[in-house]
Image 1 (tube, rainbow, N blue to C red):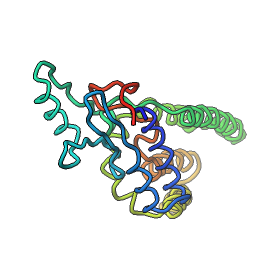
Image 2 (spheres, rainbow, N blue to C red; image 1 turned 180 degrees about the vertical axis):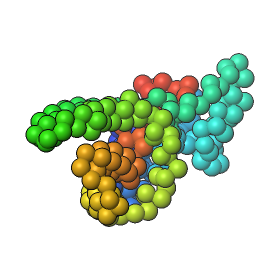
Image 3 (cartoon, helix red, strand yellow; image 1 turned 180 degrees about the horizontal axis):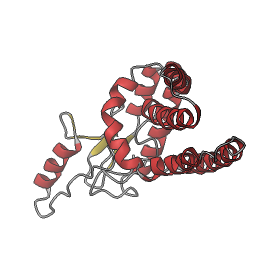
Image 4 (cartoon, rainbow, N blue to C red; image 1 turned 45 degrees about the vertical axis):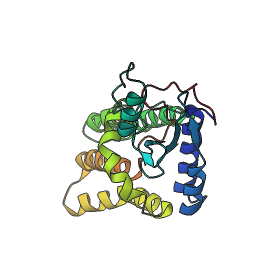
Amino acid sequence: MTFEEAGREYATLRQQRDLGQMTEAQYRQAVSQLMVVDPQGYTWSLNPDSAQWMMYNGAEWVTQAAAAQVQQAAEPSQSARPAETANPAGGQPLTSWGERTWDVLSVVGSAAMSAAWYWYSGMAETQADVKTCVAMLVLPVLLIVFRSPLDKLLRPLDKFRSKVPPMVLAGVGVAVPFLVANYLYSSGVSQFPFMFKTYVYSTLLSYVILRTPYGGRMVAPSGVSPQQGAA
């Protein structure tokens, strides 16, 4: 098994766990089976909670930072490369086909919603609600473009999110737009400002609640090629 294959399998298992298709115990058992042996003979596995690559040093599982020290001591002629911070695996996140498809659908759907709202709001006595239409077009694109830095910010929340049942988390995410709309309406916000704030606030809050950082494919730890290593 290569690092890339283990990363893909990990993402699939995590999604199944989050959707309630397997129990937490089953998820952890399955993740524990995802092991890769690098060219130096070290065994690597993914932490089921943080998605961080861990290396077995012969006595215990250690983090990538500690693993780099072990490898550097074993091969003093090769300086260990610093760990990347773009994702917990230590490399750049590779967006999966499913995530790319969802990105396209999100942008296309938002564009259609923006066009529909422009037409509908233009029927009012005032001009069309251009501000909200622009937000509907731009916000999904920004969430895609800045996904990596946003994932880094959301990463500390993952340990709390993992303790909430997936169905409860999904229910809260679906309820957020209604709760935001009710709060704004009761606060006296109305008409176009109501629509704009409801869209922006509910979209961002739902993203924070439902987004699982690094849901795509994982790559190998720094300094190890994904094609190397087999188990």
